[in-house]
Image (cartoon, rainbow, N blue to C red; front, side, top):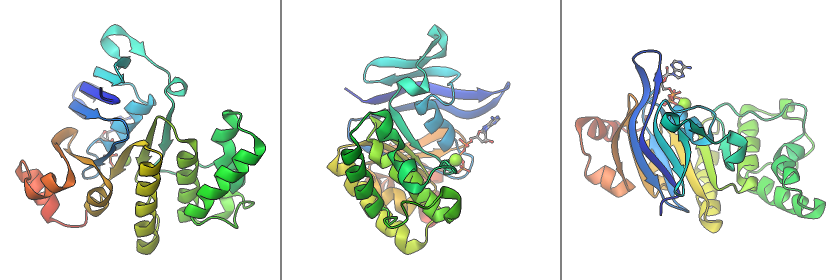
Length: 246
Ligand SMILES: Nc1ncnc2c1ncn2[C@@H]1O[C@H](COP(=O)(O)OP(=O)(O)OP(=O)(O)O)[C@@H](O)[C@H]1O
Ligand SMILES: [Mg+2]
């Protein structure tokens, strides 16, 4: 049974602007799947449809075998009912809260005990190298630090599916390399299901169980990194892989 499934999903703006079209994909429980493709290819739109922040205009989205969105039957599960975590491309950390409270927020909603919250938050802050900055307000942080607050808040929640939209784009090369390994390790330790958006193929190849290569709203190829690398299915994928850093 797949954990997340798309059946002919599409997002049409206006009369003929397809942001995403004919999208078919199965994600298994505990799988790490990356959406890889150039700017404007529909990565963020697809993530937002999983979270319910955007409604698909066509097709069906399933969690397990339950339909969460189907415009034809007017089914739409609200975002807050989906137990999906999202780390946004723009960090969306709360400016009036300090680092600790930003990260602790999802756990407070779960009514976890104060001691347990402290333990969990400090563990994650250490991983993202923000320990020592717990009491800083978000607006007193650099872009890269804010990005790590957002990442920590997503990880600490351990949702059924964690969606990450270019979560490392503002970090320097060394920190990015470390974070890739840490995210993958946490994902495997807690058997999280993750959908990870990037336009950086190195990142996708290093982290993923499965990569979905996209262009202009259409899936070009789905497969494990090695297969994409050794057996590109069309010219777009071959060129994209060849062109190195994207
Ligand atoms: N509200 C909207 N109305 C019309 N078109 C939109 C809207 N939102 C997004 N689009 C279009 O849908 C397409 C896909 O956008 P999306 O944000 O999903 O791309 P992306 O792959 O995440 O790109 P990037 O790597 O630049 O973040 C783009 O062509 C974009 O211009
Ligand atoms: Mg995007």
